[in-house]
Length: 439
Image (tube, rainbow, N blue to C red; front, side):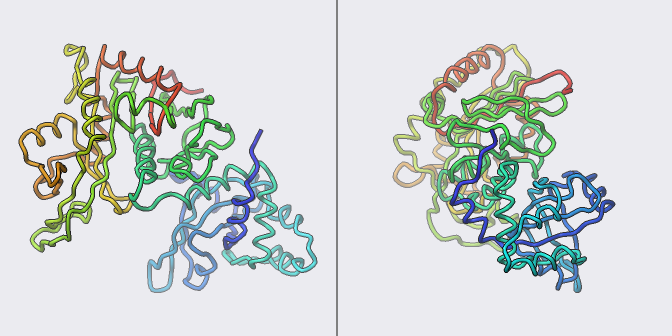
């Protein structure tokens, strides 16, 4: 059964501005043939017309002579692109019941709204703002239909997502996005919509608790293949299968000391990632000699990871499992399972962070190169001198099977993971399984 909207969610939706975009059947046909297939697209308007929209406002998209003829989305950006025009980005676009603007307007019967309702019905402007009271009534009517709960939930989840690495919520968001990207999701598809409360997992569109409704799942280019009540959503595309797990308060993290697990069955490779927050040691002394990207920090600012009892215990558990039981198995650049992703506190969640293998970290710590105050691990971008992985490079290594465990090591850890998924704690696992062609 499709879930209904919560009262607080309805209240938040009712406060959002609403715009109406009219597109012809030919225009929508062209939009639907783009890479995002209409789930995300942009159009240019004269500045005055572009102001009919508002960033993080809702948009109704009406298309005559098509079925469905009504869609709902979110305006995520409005920016000037020339002297006369602005670009408006429409995202999270999905079909909306009752299927047409005319039928939706018929649901508005309040006497005070009849005049603006009729003006909107007879209008021909391509892009216009809906009056606040009429907009509230239209979104309330949409929310009453359970079929519209998934797209509305996706929009709310997008608006609630963390924008900075200031707590575990931002780290978990990055973990899920990285997991999906590693197995073929592009930037627009690097998230999954599942209903849930306002938690770290919910805001990246994966349910925090284990009650997952089928109709709430969405990822462009993938179809829902299966699900269960262990916090698993399974997607299939061509000859690939992607399982994304959430396992709250379960023993996976306690077992391995990690936050994110990839099991690439097509390559028999397993990779695990532990996220660590970097704390600033002091103000930056910016260097003018280099023109590195902002994320590479062309400065002398230093960052600290606290080597506390928890970190020491995590390292001990990782080393316990960091053994290659099949040295003659498939080729690996690195047959170890464990990596660390280091992100700066309060940095934007769009910043890349850096990745180090357990072996590399042990090497640096053993040589005293990263010793910081009070037992801390000091990270300086300049001292590392680019000797680390970025997310994109790491993702390619995971996808290709060039890193990760092999043979008996993978089998052993997979058995532990499958057993541990019946209990759990804040662990995200992405599993890719080779299938035959998807029908």
